[in-house]
Image 1: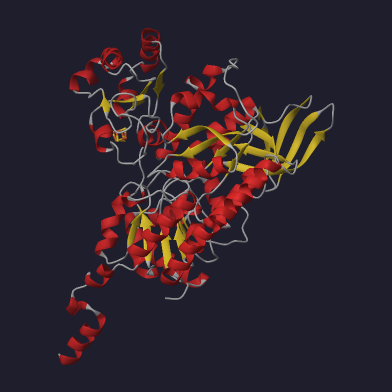
Image 2 (image 1 turned 30 degrees about the vertical axis):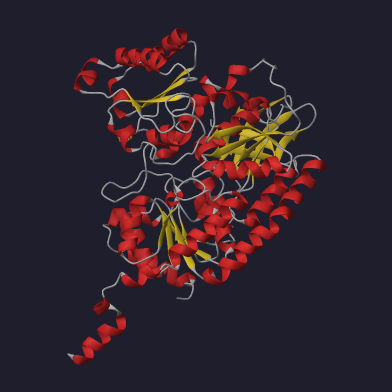
Amino acid sequence: MPSVMLKKNPEGKLVFYVPKKDLEEVAESVEFDTAELWGGEVVLADGSKYYFEPITPPDFPITLRAKRVDSGED
Amino acid sequence: MAALTREETEALIQEVLEIYPEQAKKDRAKHLAINDQSLEKSNKCITSNRKSLPGVMTIRGCAYAGSKGVVWGPIKDMIHISHGPVGCGQYSRAGRRNYYVGTTGVNTFGTMNFTSDFTEKDIVFGGDKKLAKIITEIEALFPLHKGISIQSECPIGLIGDDIEAVAKKGNKEIGKPVVPVRCEGFRGVSQSLGHHIANDAIRDWVLENRDGDDSFPTTPYDVAVIGDYNIGGDAWASRTLLEEMGLRVVAQWSGDGTIAEIEKTPKVKLNLIHCYRSMNYIARHMEEKYKIPWIEYNFFGPTKIAESLRRIASHFDETIQAGAERVIARYESEYQAVIDKYKPRLEGKRVMLYIGGLRPRHVIGAYEDLGMEVVGTGYEFGHNDDYDRTIKEMGNATLLYDDVTGYEFEEFVKKVQPDLVGSGVKEKYIFQKMGVPFRQMHSWDYSGPYHGYDGFAIFARDMDMTINNPCWKQVKAPWKTDANSEAVKVAA
Ligand code: SF4
């Protein structure tokens, strides 16, 4: 359950940062990203997947806990 | 010597690795790489931020060095107690040349060494009482100080002293911030964790001091310079440019900085990060807590300066954007003259770097402005995100080396034969004795500043006077020069 810092980059995409791993990656897709609900499965540009408990859309930047779904290539 | 091809570089790495035992070879191989600009992520080619191998000569420092030496030390109006034995503080005292204005010993304390001077007795019975006494003494002797930080050296963590309790008591007693920092040297793999610990200590003990206090009048153009340690005056050379384009620099972290500036930083509009490695943590924290965006910039060499000024300006309105253009135009004749003068003398020269936090990638642009080429670079304590940012800056098939060992670095230099090596003081004399021109790129070899347009002129002059110094021809004994040795052979 890594803590993940999430923010929007100037292009409006979600940037994913895991401090412990120096992982800085743009999210390719977010399962739920509507006015009511945010979260679910997030796929990063490097192919790895994380899961966030769906919540009401938070105010970015914010640190949330995520579950690792699969590690992409490695 | 022409640039190496991919295959040649690969062969070179293999050759250098040959000497290690099996296990060490496997480990070190992961830290040496050939740059490939097509990669997006560095973890595909290089491993970093790992424990150094026992037995090799690493060039790294400790967590205490990262906290006391880098992040906290330059905050000039605080007294930083090197808590533990005397050596750690004394041998590193004033070595980083973080310039500041003030009267040392009265209202600023940058070049002084304060230590609790642990002896056997303190290790056996604990040093908390001694620390409390030091805090009282400091208040009596240096009443104009604005706060105290306690920088733990190795023994503190080992004997389990409760410096937090002493700090809290001290804070009540003197009514100024007293910050305990758990930066014992043995923590982490390098000084990098010390930076992080120091950032966290600022976050927990200083940053929120003025939350809810709006008495500080702000403007829409307030920025903070983060991660500029004013080495040889770097922060000053940067600050003038920012001010000239119309911004107001509220805080300097931490070169020539004060604790008041740090407390005011949560009020700024934008954080400008120069050394990403040592202070990205606090910038990310402020982004989340105070919604202050941050950007990285690079003030080495006119190309990068112009790029950075424009990028910074893009976060503000037209007045600032016009200001940035005005600044670039104003200095153009100045830096063009520098390039015209030095480029012919430096064109085509090849450089190998091995430095710390930001310079292995940041100075590349400055060398390129002078027509030089960086053919190898590496970080002492970089992380993946540093190498991510380096790949695009470096040419293809150039060498990347992480936490390079003394042996590897020497071998690389022997084979690649650069015209200049830029690294630290521990490497300086080795390479100079090998007859390779060398610049000490941590504290600018007693020169500087190198940031900003003013700094670029000094940078160019220094590189020229090092590379084109006639002394390098004298390093080899006359009977050992190639032509002569041929002659000797023929005669024999
Ligand atoms: S490793 Fe420990 S003893 Fe050595 S300088 Fe750092 S804090 Fe001091």
